[in-house]
Amino acid sequence: MWEDTCSNPVGPIPPCESRLAVPPDLSDQGLHHRTVPGPKLIDVGSTHKRVYGRAKQGAEYGRFKGIRTLHPLLATVCTPQSRPVIAGARMRRGKAADSRGAPKFVSEALATAREAGCTGTRILRADSQFYDAAVIAACRRAGAHFSITTGMNPSIKQAVHSIPNHAWQHISYPTAVPGPETGELISDAEVAELPEYTAFASRKRSDRVTARLIVRRVRDLAKPAIVGEQGELFPVWRYHPFVTNNPAQTLQAEREHRHHAVVEQVIADSKASALAHLPSGQFNANAARLTLWAMTYNLLRAAGALTSTFHAKATTATLRTHLIHVPTRIARSARRITLHLPHNWPWQHAWTHLFDTVHGPPEPA
Image (cartoon, rainbow, N blue to C red; front, side, top):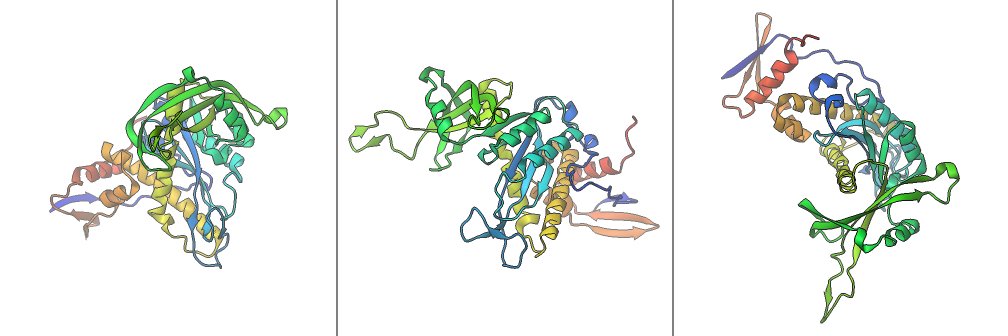
């Protein structure tokens, strides 16, 4: 049997603020962004979680017809080289709009990212549901850049169709991505930019935003190129525009914005663990469950970063299987605790490294 000994396996739990979901001591655990090169990316996203029962507070019909949901709002922080951690979480009722409370939530998320050590270039990324003048104003007040999908409204359509054909740059994805409508794999696209686009032009002057409009277009595979014996007269495209003041080059800015989907991985992780059920009929109890899950998620990310390169990128389900749900037998003798762990366990060295790092003496200042 492989044995390891510890005198105090469970340490004290530090207090935390309800707004601050990123533990303040993560700087010693490999998640401090101050020494990490590249931009610091703050992603905002929302999701609907189905609940059952009419007695649940806040459970209402929202985006999905005939389905009662609660509507959590999440903000994550990551870099191009690191997995995301949660910077904020807020529970909302089911029929709340995606952008409801978003300006204040964005301000809090950017403040949390700064407290966690995010200095230098900070970019807030969001989808079209957060395309709002107040959200962009919150980014500017915090000194952060923004990169927000716009959707194809009439003003955007006019701007996109004004782009000359020679302005489109061809790009190839490192790995093919499935099309959102047909599911077919797409590996090629074209990108163009309008350097000065005025968003919210119909509003008062203080709400107008002049920024870069970057557009990605891909062939519309839902419409066949050949119908019968006659081929298409011109290609049909699907457009994906977003506004940004990111100082990076066009292709790099488009690539960074496309990786906003990383927040969906965090949402999927939540629904595969604590948010698989929101069991309480009290709205505040379910909101507390969301906050506790966010704290647990960040602590698991810290544990993975301390364990190995593989676990630093693994999902929390893998971390729980390899590092938390460990088959062991506890023996006590002479005021010492001995853990009898499995023989030939594949994660022996990773778990031992995490154990020694957590229980070792602090490094000298």
